[in-house]
Length: 291
Image (cartoon, helix red, strand yellow):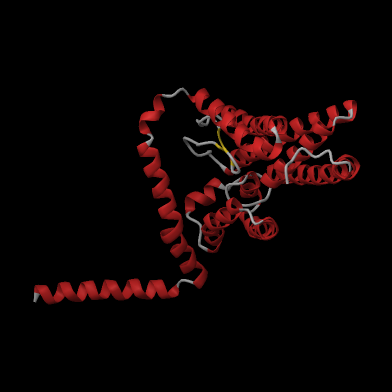
């Protein structure tokens, strides 16, 4: 009798689990499948690499940053030439410094930036931000400081007439504008948290359009990795997430205004510098990029 009761109990549990699974939408089931079949194996692979590289932790942090910068410069030099590669990595370092300053201001522990060719730079957050506002400030700080660096290049180009600094300014504007796409772990995705996470959907479409025209493997991989994050919007948020997202309306409007102003400035600046400086220079064969 005890065996029979146990069997029935397991059967009831199985039936309840099956019914619970049937109540989920197709998007929810697709998201969970991607998490288990795509995202989880990728994370497990990265953790395995980290465990293998454990002895390398004795290497001082600045060595990682400087070494990865030199490697990136060497890789980019094959396409850009060493001067443009050096300037591009410098602008990227200025961008990442904005994130580091914001993290230090809020007392969040973070690793030094590690530069990876054709991906950018990666910063390991040792602990999460305390609320959506801090996360948004962290996200917007990189593009703000990075835009300042690009503007300095643009001003230098205007004073000296240097095509090199004009091309570098264009790269800097594009770098920061791309990172402001409101999606996932991009800077714009962090800003979207304080506005509304539903901005991840148009952000995903923007990224998809970019992948369609550019055919970049890194962008395509990013689309796959960030799809579960987008699909998570259709699930009910846990109570802790609701507490995390509580930000005063005034702060939301302020962050939204800064975000829109920065995106508009970057888009207009890119168009202006391309029409005024870059396109005439390309016609004269001045480009440093090896196509």
